[in-house]
Image (cartoon, rainbow, N blue to C red; front, side):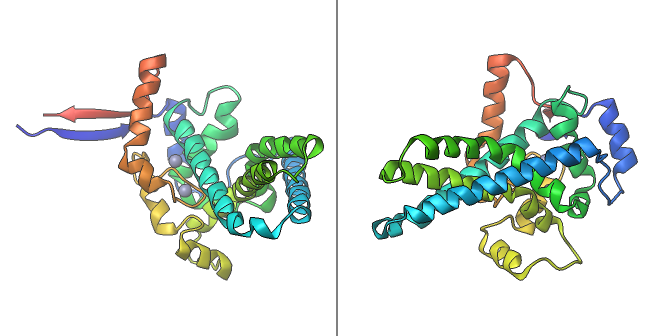
Amino acid sequence: MTMKKTRQVLESEAETKERTKYGKVTKDVRPHTSDMWLRELILALTSALMLLVNLIFLIRHFKLSYSAYVLPCFFLGLLTADFQSAFIHWVVDTYFSSETPILGPAIVRPFRLHHFAPTQITYNDYLRTYGDAAVFTTPHLLFTMWILCFYSLESKFVYFLVLWIFSYSLVGYGVNQFHQWAHTHGRPIPAAAEFLQKLGLILPKDHHRKHHTPPHDCNYCIVAGLVDGPLEAINFWRRLENVVESVTGVKPRIHTTVKT
Ligand SMILES: [Zn+2]
Ligand SMILES: [Zn+2]
C-alpha cells in the first residue's frame, strides 16, 4: 500500500474570486487613496530620518577596537530581518483571510494577491515600496531613539545593541525592494542589486521562485533567503503550525491530505 501526501491551499470564496479576476493582471490593483499615500509618506520619511540619526550616532561613537565586530553584528541584523520577514510572511500565508478586519486588507490580501500575480509588485512606486516596509521598521527604530535619548553609546553593550537594531531595520526597510528585484524579469535592475543577489545577501530570484509554487509553504524569507535553508531542514514551519494548533486549536489554511 502506498501513501501519497498532498498539500493544498484552502482559500475563502472572496479570495478565489480575486484570483480569477486578478490572476493575469500585472499592475498594482490595490486602491491607493490619498489617506494611504499620506500614511506611507509619513512612515517612509520617519523611518529614513531615524535611520540617519542612528547612523550619525553610531559613526560618532565608533571606536577602532570595535572594527572586528561591526560586520558580524551587521550580518546578525541581516539574519534577524530575514527571519522576521519569513515569520510575518508565514503568519499571513497560513492564517487569517483577506476579509479579516484590519489585518486582511492591510497585509493578508497583498500577500495572497502576490501569489496569483507575482510581477505586480514590480510596478509599485517608491512610496508604496518603502512606506509599507516602514510599518515594521518604525517600532524598532523608535526603540533605538529611546535608547539614544537615555543611554550612552560609550557603553559597548549599548553601542552593539543599537548597531544590531539599526542593521536589521536598515535591511528591513529595503525588504519590498529586494522582493521586487527578485521578481523583475526582462527589465534591468541596478548592477549592485544583481551582485548582491549573486552573493545571496539579498533575495535571489531562483531561491524565491520555490515559494511561488503552490501550496506556497516553503522559503518564506523575502529579505535574503539565508535562514530558509536551516528552517526548512528542521521542518520549522510545520512544527510551529502543530504547536499553534495544539495550543489554540487554530488550523493552518494549508492542509495535508494523506491518500492510500
Ligand atoms: Zn507567500
Ligand atoms: Zn514573491
